[in-house]
Image 1 (cartoon, rainbow, N blue to C red):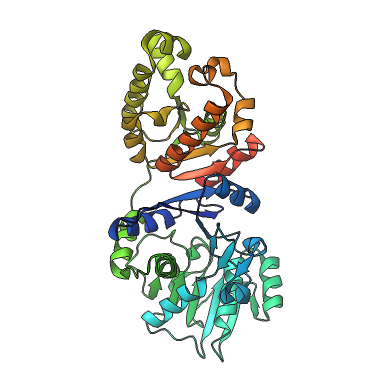
Image 2 (image 1 turned 90 degrees about the horizontal axis):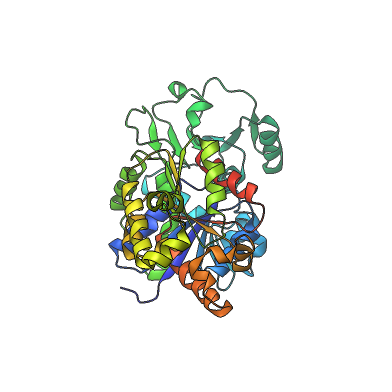
Length: 422
């Protein structure tokens, strides 16, 4: 195995259901690579870049709505980034930007013998992805491009900028040879029964589960996800993964039911308990706070548990609580800051579905708490606390699936998490 751990993440909004971590972590297992890949929840590109620096993340995959915004933060850009004025892969170390979206689209076409020449093409959606697709399609001559979007003014604006057709209302899609969908479910906007049997639908989302009932040729968003990720593997590891094996794996993952369990981890004062309470209220989930559960079980406050029974006793109780709630659904679990100091707890958390690392800078975290109520911090000097913060950050990163930067308004953090899961 490669000795140096490569830290990667995908950044976008919403991003909770992105399969990019599953994809790259699967390839890491398949090809014996040392990769740790996470999701970053954010609504601010600068926050994502600062968070990546603080957590020593090496590379970011960039998805909607940040592809264009990342362009201005890059110090070096590949040709494709310039052509599409968009970024989908960012090297955090040297601020270099790449765009492999067009490679992904070209691969879908070439691998499946699809031609866009002299075709009538419909694009559903009018966001950044739709804009990129128009630019991509225009390299193929003599085709006719039309845009259809629920928000009419947005579609009109894009059609004017790109000089393509605008459709205000569509009842029948039989006149189109190829349809690109950039929205979660194209069936909400067009009648699929009107799509010709010889037509091709290329979906750039994978919200629709594998469906063999379509009468037309259908390519789900997993195709684009895999093909645009392959150049990253070639660039970093000189490895070209097998498409069919990868596609079958991701299809199985994508069809698994969600258990709707969210676990919050992070340093003391990062905001786990406050976020957990409000998030549970908004989502109508039950909240379980591991510290409160242990205090109720022992009849003692945490400082007294440490004093009377010791730290190992407390850490073992934390592990038992995690073990107990492992199969619970529709719950928010807020954990103590030291939950990752026990290897058994780490192993349990790694099998949880949605573990969110609530990250706040050390100074911000300490400003929110009474250190005297935290036995470990109370008996540590500033240098020891800084060292503990760094050590724990590495462990939080190891076990989490997703990360959110809670250094500003906590209500914004709650809103961001809620909107990703609602």
